[in-house]
Image (cartoon, rainbow, N blue to C red; front, side, top):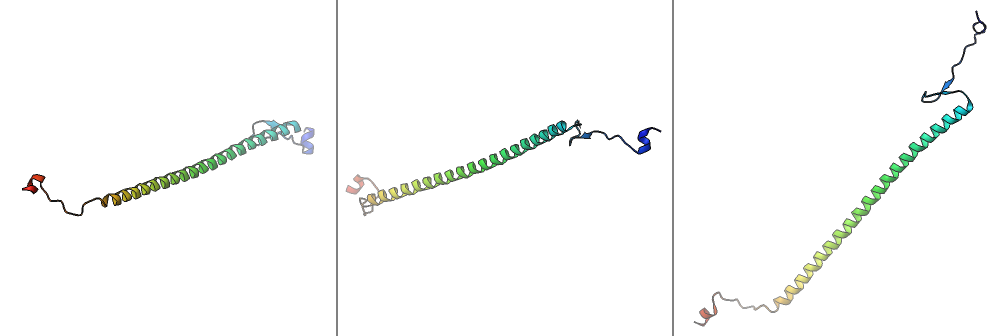
Length: 113
């Protein structure tokens, strides 16, 4: 029997990092792994923040575009209403000059005969 078996001493393998990609043997290795994991988490968080910001900007753009479309529709309908009013005014002015007599069918020659 060797000395390790007599006293129940067992060898402890080095620790793995979270992804089991390499052994962490000392505090420098541990700190490096923690920094890498933190950098990955920051990158993921930055990507998520950018995605949320992009969605917010797209939503604001859609709202702005819909407001512009509504304003354009209002202006268009207002221009139609103004044209209709002008046509009614011109029609009223013209109706003053229309003869109230009924015009008989036929030519002037027929009327004279």
